[in-house]
Length: 127
Length: 127
Length: 127
Length: 127
Image (cartoon, rainbow over all chains, first blue to last red; front, top):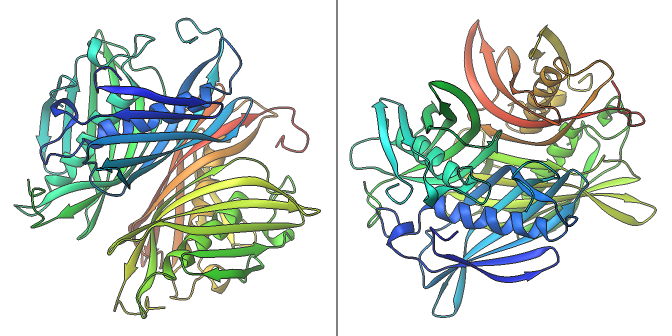
């Protein structure tokens, strides 16, 4: 997240918000934030949201995610809002909405759904 | 791609290979390449593969992608191999396999499918 | 939908609900409604929701969908609630939640996101 | 599968083929095989392919799948070819191609990727 310039913005049980201020490092050739960076913050928001509901000591891995890119991600700030749809023993489903904020107005730019896996006691994966 | 340290490795009609040498900028807390970076190179490989079959002047946008992350992306080099599954007038379906190379041996770490949209004549999107 | 025993339950602009009363034709070997039938009603709910916002005469085709199956679909009634996330000129993103109703209580069993394409003037596809 | 008129066509370790002869029960309003039925046979082909590599007594559940629908599914016969991409202890990734056969010639109509979960000792899920 440091590479992208993203910061954790808000955390509550089952919900996490990540903010990204667009800069040249995450922008592609057309001036928008690159789909890869949008996906990364969306996946992180979903993953951390899942982690908030997991037992202490557990780590989280993304098994898969799907993202629909709805509009160019351009604006003053990109916000990824992750929330848990269903927390399970092995698998958790979370979703993240990504909005681009311009002069205080928000526009939906992407929607992600992710399957997260809780991992315990794996070397180097505990969080 | 520059931010991630990725380079275009091979290009032929309908197929593109991107290479990424893991460094600290793209690694997450457990030492693996971050899922977001894996997704970014996979999406780029699929997108450029689609672009090779589009008419001159067209640009390419990712409408959606889905990625399954199968194993930690760790190794000497990460390779994303994109290929077009079906090229259409409006929509193209492409797939990318991501492998991690360690001492010359490859391991499949991710599989992506993406829907790409050809765009023509949109300001700043022509490639 | 007739084959599955599904019926259109509620329609408003951008939102459609389809109901399915489980019977032997749609049940798999463990007594649950088959994932294929759950997907079919979810996809239909998303598709019809998209169609409510399209111009008269347009037809709708599903370009792709993704479904997470969260719990066995068993109960008195299966409800698929589709709603449009973003309506576009070419592509529309819609989502459908599928719940299983047992004695008036609902349980989320599946979540689908679909990309729908408006088609106009194609032989036999106009709706 | 019986409801759809589908039959198991070929089975080998990690690979399964299911055939479907289109009839009115699985066709939608435009005369094509309904996306729901295409998904059902594709998901079944992927699921059974996964099952061939699981330990005896295990059952298989689909955690999620994604399908791209590339062309109308019309023809003499629909074939879904499932194969395992990666078999894991908990999760297996499988893929299925769906082709429509017309006078011996094949056309790719859909591509599915699915995450399957091995389940053991759950009441009524052992296969």
